[in-house]
Length: 154
Ligand SMILES: [Zn+2]
Image (cartoon, rainbow, N blue to C red; front, top):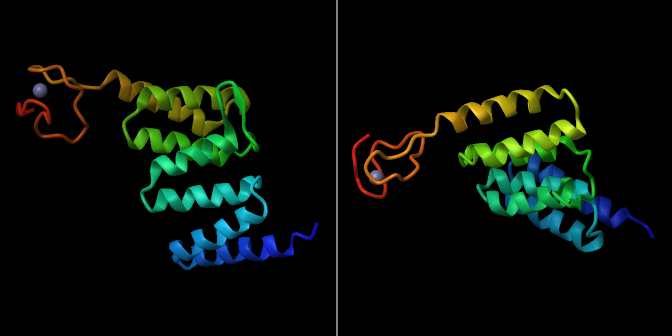
């Protein structure tokens, strides 16, 4: 099977991304996916653009397919950037426990990787410093000036 049509769409997608034309990039990458729906490089590009556009949940699903999830092997588990990006999304959303688990799994696959080592430390630090509302017990976000549940000033 010739992959020239696939390559053409993939390259078009990369070029659009380079120029910041993310919607066009996604369109081309989708066309590439229609030709080959099991190419982790296309998924990775797609996921990164989703992240740029703030669609973290959609991006996450692709990172799971690429790197795998506990009990389910991914299509390209050695793509370290998929691991890093997933952990970054979890950290961004203050899901420190989940991020810590990703960094731990990352260290099993990439021993001594400095990003995973530091990420794991950062996640544990943040997790230890999570604050709760003294009035209602709701977990507080880092930059919240008042409790979003009960309104207590922090
Ligand atoms: Zn409260």
